[in-house]
Length: 299
Image (cartoon, rainbow, N blue to C red):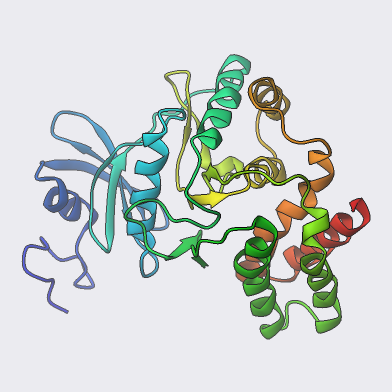
């Protein structure tokens, strides 16, 4: 395949090379490229600025990520990489120079995360300004359709689509799916006190939380949208995070979650666990089923 006009030199399969894409999108000389993982390449501008060049893995994924990073940055709360340029296929951002995790950085991050959530969103499910409605979380599609009430929106756009996909793939049985469907039916009583839409990172597992050499915690790879702030907090707990209790303690000092929020952690983890079940199979399906049963027992 011949690259489109202005695409730069072609790689071995006719695809544009990451450094050529970065130069095209930013108008700056790019060198020192080296593959990191998957579709991500580390490179440097001619002035030594470290950047990441990322190839999108689905329709709308690059535009959603770029819009999400800018929306998070606009809150002036958490540290996120700068967006230097993008098109529908490539994204060029600043690269975080990583250091060690530290308690004082965890405290600052907890307070910053509270401020990010407080920046708010127009509605539950609202995409970032300029972001597509058809977005993604990791490698899975994710639809950002606004809704007025969190329980109904969460069921319709964050739980049931992935539950159906898991059943269709044979990862969950229909009998097991009935447990999750019961959670959705009881969401109004399980959800806790009503809260306004928060500005969420949306995929806040520990792999997207980078401890910078500058002493700040940086957030990458957002699936940003308007949602319930307890979803971000529950996702931080899902796979563990350094100094987690320090982060949550500092968060609570600024913006205490509603009473009983720890009992609702499985409810909010149900969404990412179902996403993982769709992507990675039965092991996560069992965890999703356990989360659903815990949510029901807590209610």
